Picture (cartoon, rainbow, N blue to C red):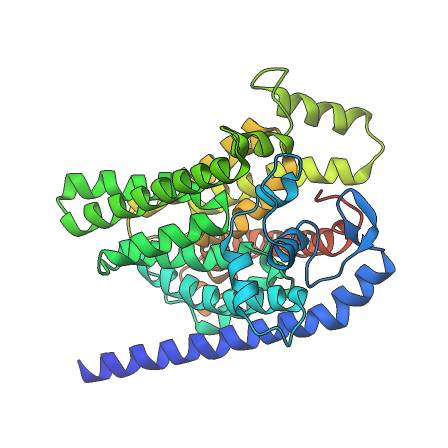
Length: 400
């Protein structure tokens, strides 16, 4: 027992060290690569070509900074203030003013990324029998969305909270944990809503197995997300002095499904056939490729129970459903980045493809080994292309 506890403590120490190395590596990458590249490519605020921004607040992250500096402007005429949830803004305000607001946002993202890496590693321990080395955390920035650790954003804080929410269910933590992490996740980004089907699967399975703790924590997590979200919606409406203000500003950021439920696919077909804008084509291709690839990987990686597999699948399908519902291909990468399972199955697949456990099987036939290595190499190539898409596509407005 003492030896097992010592091994556990050592593994935890190693994951912290490698998470720190990965985070510092992303910080260096931001200064060495992203900053000069995005300055050269003239990154600016969406819809504001004269307002230049860098890796500390790319794309729409500047609006969290503006809310921190100027306060919320409670009007549907200023949707870029109202539609952003408040936790990141609170975090910016709480840090010392010695740093400029945009660098406070970047620091929050880095610290959240560090915590999220450790939490995702612990999450993998709960769902998979694979003994993943802590050094695998160095590969997270390679995975789709992983490079966002290097930038100031709200996705990493949300990932941190959703990872802790998942652990609170799987490890049977005290009941205040799912209440706390669910509330913080939804007050960071509405992406936390995709945790509801994930928790719903655990809840359903626990009812059949009569695991009261998982039933209780799953219910608390779902209730926390829904209740706090509804309270925030009410808070926005009251401050804006207009019933439905929250939903009105949300509609501004989406593309209406005026053509019916297949509008997204119709737009994709038109862009693919007629558009000469490579950014538009890549947006739609990656919007479908990321969830489809995740679902394919999910079928291959070893998990402790099929409940975990169905739960992860439910989360992926929820993301796809919302993407289709709002008819917006830009959103899928930020959705995936806030789900711990997205990174977990990616790391497990790389371990299955290249790790010692995979290579140590002497009974594996040469053809099967070649197929496994080929699939792993193809996935790595996709990850590298997604990284390039992130670096080049962000300033070229492919994500807007």
